[in-house]
Length: 406
Image 1 (cartoon, helix red, strand yellow):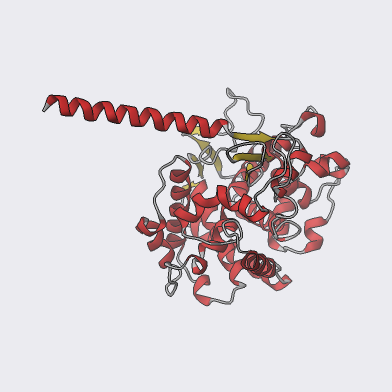
Image 2 (cartoon, rainbow, N blue to C red):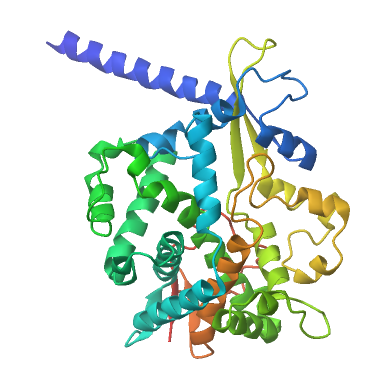
């Protein structure tokens, strides 16, 4: 009996060892690039120096590394599908949905402001990440539905927070290798059905997360860091930045977003672009390559985060938040700035919706959360004078312990 037990233990040890080695080999096969031209080539899934011509088509090259989100979220969208016609239809739909009318922007401003006020009533301490997730997800739901579904306007904040947390937990778990198939993730399914009562989640193409994941996941983390950066770090010496964004959130027009303010001639667009530069919503864009030069396919990654902070392109102050750099952008800087990807897979939200919804949500926070609130991280005042900060961490959970206290 002891011999059998010992044999089982030895087999388990061998299995774990082999698995770890396979994981290491897989990571070693992944190559990251951080030069603008190379990043654009990776995103396009074309030929790369050292790999030769990619035998995989662009859609296959993109879908393979996104199989994880297909499995854990039960979705089939432009990121996971290899069906050319379906991808074109999906992108066309997304482009139409993010093309908001001025009246839509006004309504979005009103709804998000009212949601923020509900959170603040009677509160002396607020979990910042949860607040911003709720505002971001509510804005995503309403914008992508074009306010056509009155039920989405009446969804409780608790239901929205449950869905936001379920999405975040699923994402983190899957990145750690703890993949649970969507069909077995009852918490995520229940949180979806609490909002979308009549959806059949067994069909990936009908899953509302198809549109929610790309919008919400690329929004809340940028808004969180933008709010902290402008409100408590670089922006502490520039109260006019907060006032500009608050004014835009109250009247979210094109003119208000682009209007140059003060001696530094800074616009809300400049403030948002600098947030996107330092804290890109997608840090790396992955593609799979297969060529005659290698027996196995390899993973390639466009490291946008590194590309956005190269000293030779952005200067020795590349790690500083300085919106003034956007007054006179050089050609190399324009080419290096890719927060929404690049052709042929550029996000439909890039030109208008993406930057403006970020500005609206950050500005909404500044409209209501004023000087009687302080930010605390891990129970200590933020920023902590004893810990110099050049740039906030862009790790997903870096600000998960941040609280606003009155």
